[in-house]
Image 1 (cartoon, rainbow, N blue to C red):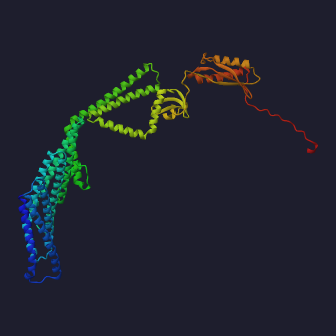
Image 2: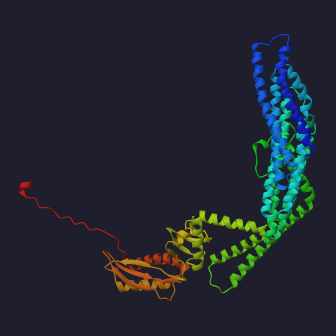
Length: 580
């Protein structure tokens, strides 16, 4: 602070004195000139002179305000002193901007104008110290920022929030200083003036500042990773969560400071690609201006380098974890197969009255559960946390269940079919317009094979919501046959023949006894019902055998089986004599 004030005060005093001197020099310029200036040059010089006079007046006012602030600073303490320092920083930046505006105006004066010659000499000499003064002032501001940062780290609560806000304002002021210094020097170079001597060190200062911020970002990244690991082990520790939040906020501030340094480096046409790469990798906000070919190449190069180093460092552990992962999967696959065998043997030997479908489902589910457990344990060997995975599966299951309501309906129907057992494997059923032998069932659908060897897959909700006809559910079935004889045939003889034919078949059960009765008197026949009982698997053999045997025996016994016929009677018509 003490170093900056005299230099800035002297530089501003010189600027004001020179510019005031320029007014008198311009007044004497016509007397010194041997040739009168043209009308155009005279008008331009008058306009520039008016602008210079206005700027000089404003500059004097700013210098006066800075002088008053410096006097007050000698007596101020505490928050008042900080406020006065901040205000004087803003005034100093305004002075730099005024000097930046004065320089091009001086160069607009005619080359033969003595005012321009005098001011150019001063700008190249005394006023060049303004850049050094701003640079020194910036160094002092850096020191204040470090002190403020130390106070922030020691504070807590409301006081910490206030100090952080003050720290952000100082950091923004630092950016303004850098920007003003660069713009001031660039404008001098654009007008053919030599660059500021202070800018020779500014690129190095920016590189050092950027490296410091990168170091802070990397250090905070490592600390954040360590805290996250500890928080996984002890998720109930609120202090760890609070510390993690604070570190993340600090890292975001470091990245913002690094982003400002990159913008300043771009103004100076310096290579900022490595630092933009860090911003893209660590920052939460991505800007299009951060991307270019160098940055992308740097990201690819860093990623490949990190991958190679990670492979070299963790190759042994990675191979071991992979082998452990594969071994765990194979082991649980073997366990699943063994469990399925044990389940099958246990269910076959048990006295539980459960269907074959239910047995198969229980066996499949037990093996699937074992495989899922093995997969989860194998993933845990790779370091994958199962808690978030299970939570994600729960959320995903809710979403999938909402989207697949019909499929869930099939699951529910399948469960009800397994529970109430309306049919089993190899049963002949008629459901939902389909008939055939049940070959397979899952919780979603039932597979039916028709007699002509077609395969039908019927959703379970279609089956459970309709009438289920199980033809082969019982051990024995009744064969229903109907035979008709002529009205001229003997009923007792026919009954005796039918009894003999049924009794002669070896697959007809003696108990229950078959039923053979005169059933109906039809239009052209007397109909007998023949109802023997057989085992379910013999149904069609008995049906076809009895039908053939009855027809052969009726033919042998002279019993006729009538068929529909129509008698046509022709009556002659007598003709009268008039019709001839």
